[in-house]
Length: 246
Image (cartoon, rainbow, N blue to C red):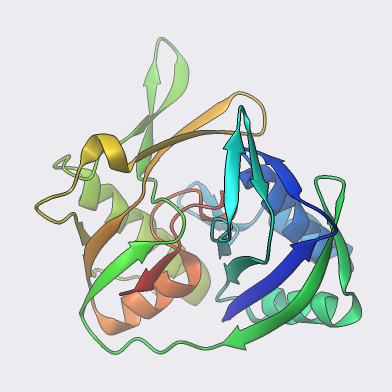
């Protein structure tokens, strides 16, 4: 299920350029009316093969803005999207949005002008897509006794392998069924790696490398439907991997 939110600040909304964690916090705050569910999702999530999935994804903010130093300043109506395949998540979020019109984001008042609840149906096996939040594909490895994370570029030969593994684990965590479907995310011929690269800090000292722009996405319709609601790649609940058809 998909939520489209439209809101506006009491004045210019000033956020750090690295604002993913602020949006994530907004979502968890809305879920806190059910403390057990919120704690489960935050602390544990849905487990599969040693990985945890929170099973929601959100976009970057869309609206008119300017950048000043390390800040991004929105000065008009802002659009934001949130999706999840988990019914209770969606119900809880909808309840919270119905009960309140004035919220806070980074200590600033924002007014919810309206919101839409959509159920987009995916029937095709190949889609032209645009990332609404950059896609991150990574894997963990041991080096010197420490666990490190490597982020892959779209042209890396292992990019779609790890993208597929991520999908299969998420799918099994939700449905209880194994999937052998492959996921193929293909950059166009004119894909500019330097311009599409997106590097940000999440919270404290976690640096994340991801990729924005347009891609071709191939898989079964069922798999694409699942990915539409959960997000592509890793770190979906941190605001990475949401896409739209173009």
